Image (cartoon, rainbow, N blue to C red):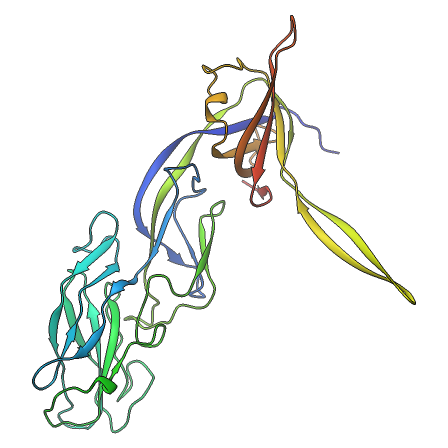
Length: 330
């Protein structure tokens, strides 16, 4: 039977900045993890997740003369790229891009990309007798560099010089174009992971998906002195029933409860915890401060102060969480 011995409750007293980094694909091109966790959610210190891809503009149209297209001005998220601003955006001016035609076969697919420097670059695939949807195959698009973003494709079925037709230009998101906001994703700030709704296409050199970058803050924890009665944010279940002619139909609903604890502090504006009320913070709980297992709870701190005559000021604290407390082995 467990006994709460030498417990410790900590709160997010500050934040430590972690600059842009590329997340690691765990192997399924769907879940990517950072080197740091958890991620702070306090206002002004939130994590920024930026999958590489087109953000605005970038429409491709047939150019003037033979074998070229005009790409409209665009912005793309490419954090850490040489041409990127501090927010991760690359700004590219409108320009014409020359397109290759097949010299020995008839069909060739050319990818229009933004490279690491922020320049528009055409990357031609292998020539073929017909078009292929397979990267690296004859008549298919090429694998593009890992530090580039694909804006669209031009598919030409003749080796003879001629103006490009708009019907030969393809910019379907997910097939011919990488957008930063597709597919959509969710974050797990406790584990430091990004979960995409679908597998990212493996269209980059080495059969790799596009880069996923992020920057953010990790909490700096400090112990809450004179705390007691920690209650984690847990999910409870309740049963509902509907009467029908030959019995009842049951259903189950879930409710996420608030975390809570009692804190004996100063209770005024000088109190470090009182100053953080109404902020979204992390709380870390150790049942035994000398052992590795711990739990993390993130939520908005609420307080209720009581000033008894001749006794200690006690502060009833609640943590309104969006997800249940997460347990870690250490």
